[in-house]
Length: 444
Image (cartoon, rainbow, N blue to C red; front, top):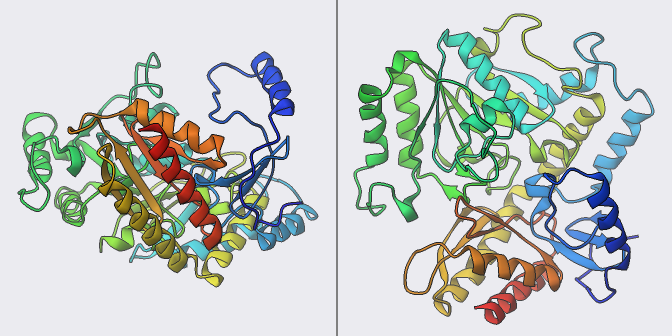
């Protein structure tokens, strides 16, 4: 059994995985794709072991779902303890205490300054869908504003809010009506041709112009944004931009929704990314690392907004499953007890230092950005900023080949993102960055 302290060792071949891939191809829909050439057998801490016994360092954390690490002992204990009592009943029929316990915990840690209430669902997309429903009920309006480079999920409304066409939206239309897109503050590739620090926040000015030329603000129920756009390429929104959006929403009576599905739970060096911005959102959506990989999501919002929806109008059979809630409470307790917010900053600082040093020696590395341990680097063509998806893909494959699992991001597919579990050891972190450095030096 893994201890979680192992280092990568990829020399045992993939015979068992190859057999499983044959079954996968015969049984699983083609739309369900996979990245790595192996099937997982066991995971602990920041380490993965495949069915053939090869060992890998995990640098993607289930796309941000296991910030506290794989198989946290106290979380497993909480799951086991709850599973011995009951697995499921449906909170909407026969309620149970684990739902209330996690809701109480979230009202204490989620940084919305007003009185708060909570509703639980199963996935990030469900949280987004329900946040939009609540905002519409509260405002009695229909329109929604989202941003370029956004990713909010794969269900109808969430997909409509999402910006990347392929693979997420192509051939899946028509989409939800009255969803409006405006530019995000992608400073490295500013849509207004400006340079951050020398601009006049034209991205904010555009929204007021948009309200004149495209839609009246009195028709807009909500504005939703990721403080760091995850699938869009870990695009960190400037503080001035987020403060400006909040002010616009207050001015026009628009519900301000912040999507913290990937940024939440210590990932950005704060418990939640909004803490970097000094804003007070109306609603925050949560999922991924809320329960260490057990399917669970939450909508946390100001009490008056959350209560604008009457009984029975939101919910779901499995929303707030008792095992998931027990896992969620134990996960938050583990994050706080083990100072993973501080550890996230330490990890991120180390990764940034290594990347900056590499950047000086490499003409193909463009923007390096992130907060805490949510870090990304854009790969570009030599001597220009044209996205280099081919190079990024080759580097990812070389990393996996040598025991480091990293994944891409960005609307152009040219970004490599770093999301290591926050329990990664110093030795594992150094080894991971050594593998990444060697991959770059070999592939460029």
